[in-house]
Length: 342
Image (cartoon, rainbow, N blue to C red; front, side, top):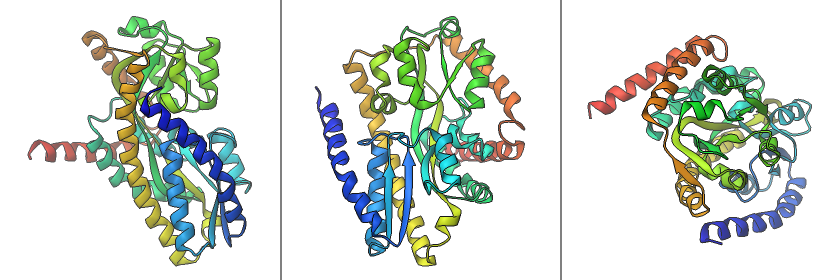
């Protein structure tokens, strides 16, 4: 077992052992937030969230506490949202695909081939974050921060280097994600919609043979154990949101609310660095574990980009508003022009 994997499993065990202590402390707090996530224990996502929670608890003198339910124990994003609405939990780390039924414009960063670099991602997130906050506020949720999975790749049990091979695959589409579904249907596929917790089992049973994830995500979710090939072209950016119930959050004194916003900004900025470093390391780990990286042919790449344009035309005004699309494109064009002149 290589060093990366040893560290992963050691972190998993260590963090599992400290869950109980954190929940006991939360029980004594004046303000307790029960927060759920699909992210597995031991991952960079849960680690950074615990750093955030520990800082908030410490700075509030123990008046704010957290109970953290990681690894999908509260169900998928939709189940988490239902439990949030009835007060069973007070917030969660949601994937974009899982929460965008509630705020459709949050999907905008998930357009295939929208970004050329993480610098562009960071620029657009910064520009659109205030708008996202307002949209979630209308739905009685507080957007404290955005999380990141990273650039997503095609992971399959058979090599996919041509459009014909892609069309013959049994491909997964995230349940409730009209963007991925529309693109795959435009290509000529009938994607199989599944929630994220069902993907690994479906790869094991043969219901699907093609899924989509980041390098690091495929390791922590164990999907890499059921795939053999990665098509080495990032086609979409994946991200999420850390949301709290507005009613619960509004009970906090103003200074505590401001402190939580500041702590989230700091720790989720660190999470970006962690996630990108983990994806870089995971790429090599996957290759060391006999996962082959294959290239899409130039002709197929061009064809796929053409399908992308067709897909966007179908989605604008439906999956997300025309105004958010126009704003996003304007920000990106302005940023690219500035970068080109430097």
